[in-house]
Each structure stands twice: as structure tokens, then as C-alpha cells.
Length: 441
Image (cartoon, rainbow, N blue to C red; front, side, top):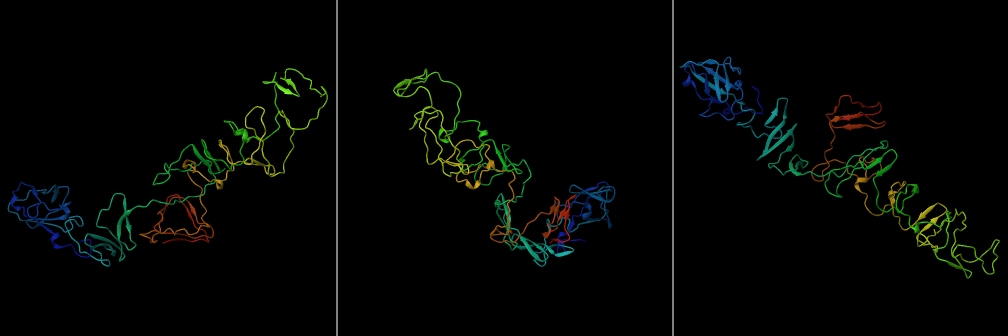
């Protein structure tokens, strides 16, 4: 008879059924199955677990009830009523309690576990101490389970010697990313707080074109002090401050009937309504003057493409007769076209060629990052942990998946390895070239 463990189950597991022959009368077929006056615990599940004899004849266990006997509830039910005066004996086989309930096994040891297997007797389970159960694999203890239940959210952690304890599950600090340079619609990941254990999220109003490198959002906010290649055609609102406009040739159209306020020219009042004669000045002909013009409608300018330090001219008001001014904090490099100021303000919605290296303050909102970040080339990274994990500071266990779900080709000049068993999904191909090697441990 098969059994579990290295020793036969103890004799007391074979239970003798109480004698029911006093109830045999030729008409009664159902009798209570009891051991020492009460239903045995655990109770047999199948009739095949019982040996029943009536008047020296072993009865056939028949769950259908058409021959021999069956079990119904906690009763033995015979297909035919036993006759009065017939003898009875019955036995519950050892193991009728479904492996171990109500029975016992020896403690066992690492070399000889108490619960083992027919073809692998040094693999199984044994009692390693009070309230402790250990698992053995090929004569080596691989796990001893703790004697407490731990707390909600905890996980079993090994000390590297097979002893398990409950510990808090750590939060991942790194994730594996891959290079994506062709998808035109990606979504940067962000979280709702700056720190903490949080779920990653995306937003349809923040996208990244991995093919062109364009990051798109509904709006941008922050200093654009070092932005370049701005397109003035995309300015759709606001007013450029006068201090930001250089002195340029300006052409105007239209007419003015009179000056708002009459001015005196050479001692003669002039409001623009008619010509005047200036004393000592011819009324006709070209006139050359020297000095500073009080009000001029145009000025002559020349092309300047070589000076590296120029100062754009501005005024303190948007309109009127104002003095042109400059400031050292607003410069223009005529040689390379760079306009520099202490700071810039306004929407940079369509700015291009921005350099992240020039960001010196503020925080990029999480919503601005793509759903799938570009892969990082770690070929030149140093001081990176090997990735093996274990209890404490141990670096023992390497993890890999068990099922290949995507086609994979080992690159030329490379070898690959994994821990088995490995299953290759239907329709998936793993290609190993003539110069490469795949090793599965």
C-alpha cells in the first residue's frame, strides 16, 4: 500500500469500527459508522477506505449502492439487509484521513525528510524545531518557514541560509527602459506628488514625438532666458515691451491735420496747419543742419554684421516724442545674431532647440515627461550594482522570467544565458546564430 514518508504510518491510524451486528435484523440496511462510540475524525471520504466483513465475507465497496456497501453521511449503507446473528467487523485503513490529518510523521532531518517522494527521497518536508517546518531539495535545506503570521503587506524574505522571515516589501527605485526613436505619439509619465510610493500616470495633453523629438503640451510656464530659434510669427497675444525693441527704420502712413500741441521752431509757432517762414532760413532748397534733432520721424541706419557688442535702443514709453536709450543688460551680437538680456518673459509655446543643460531653476512638471522614456545607454556607466538580491546586503539571487513571449535573436558576437525551465510561447521564435551560444541552467 502506498504511503507518504520514510516510515509506515503508526498502527493507531488503522481504526477498528464499532460492532454493529446487534442491529442486524434482516430489514435494516443503514448503520452508524463509529469508532469508540463516536464518528471518527476525520471521517472516511470513500467506501474504498473501509474493510467490511459480514459473517466472514468481505463486502464489496460500491459507491453506487447496488452491491456491497457504500458510505452515506456518517452511516454504512448495505445494498442488502444483514440477517440477525451474522458477525461483523470493520476497519478504517491507515491514510483514510487524507495524508496527515489525525496522523503523525517522524520529525525527519535535512538528509532524511519525513515527507518525501518515491523517486526523490532526499527532497521533501521535515520538522526543524518547535513550530518550524523546513523544505529540503536534494539533501539541502532551502527554506525554513517562520512560526508567526507576519503583518499585512509583508513578504517572506530569506537570510541567504534558507531561513525565512516576514519583512516589508521594498519599492522599486529603477525600471528597465528601451530606446524609442520612431513612434510619433508617446506619452510621458508623471505622478501626482513629487515623492512617495505613487502610481505612474499620463495625460493626453502632454505628448512626445520620439521621431522628431517634439515635446507638446497645452502651455509652458517658466523662464526662457536661454531659449533660441524663437519664431516671432507664432506670437499670438500680449505686447512686446518697448525695452525689448531695437532702434530700427520705421515707415509710417497716414496724415496729421495739426499738432496736438503747437511747437515753436526758430521762434515761430508751428502747429502743422500751414507753412511758416523761419527767420534767416530760405523758404526753399535743401537745408543742412547740425546738432541733435529734438523730434525725428526717421533716421538713417547702416548695415552692421560684424560688431560683437551692440546695444539696442529703446524708449521709456510706447508712443510720443521720447529720448532713445540703451542699457548694458540688453545687448546684441551683430556677428552671430544673439540677442541677450537678463531675463525673458512670455509664452514660448513653439520654441525649438531649447537646451536642457541651461535650466538653472524650477522643476519640470511630471506631465511633461513622455509615457515611455528613451532608453539610457549604460555602456559607460560605472559603480552600478550587479542586480543580485538577497537578505540584508547579500547579492545572491538573479531573477528571470519563465516564458518567452516575443521573438528574440542573439546579436552577432554575443552569447545569452538564462535559468530554466524556459517556455517559448506558440508562434514565438528564438534565433541562435552559428557564432553565438544560448545556455539555460
